[in-house]
Amino acid sequence: MDQTPNIWDGFCQLLGKVFYCSAMADKVIKAEEISKLNDLIEEHWQADGKPILASFYSCVNLGFDTEQLWIEIAAEKVVDPGLFSHEMIEKIMKTSYKVAASYASTNKSEIIFISQLRIALQK
Image 1 (tube, rainbow, N blue to C red):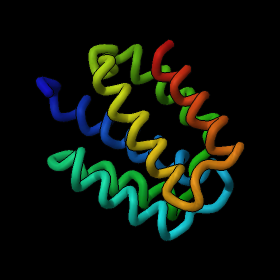
Image 2: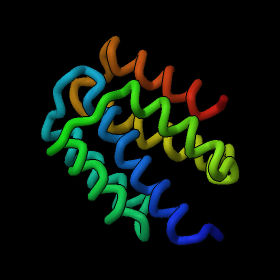
Image 3: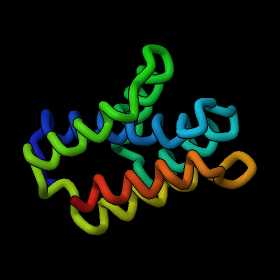
């Protein structure tokens, strides 16, 4: 990606929050979800994995509100809408869905979150 480091670092932090909220949609993060996220980061987000995981674990330690996520996505899209290409949105959605589905498939809370995430990313 041809982005300045500060913009891309901020985007990676946002992705960590997205994946945290995906795992937390049902109010509990399970070990399977963390394991799946680690596998997906290694497989699909290689170079950007460390800042994404750092942001994820920061949310685990400090907590993070889903309502704040929608605000941050909207703000990031204003700062650099080019980061949200169709391909990137699909990559984010696939990762989020796989994290949410990694423990006993998806439940109602996770399906609602994934639907809201798609809407927020495509606005």
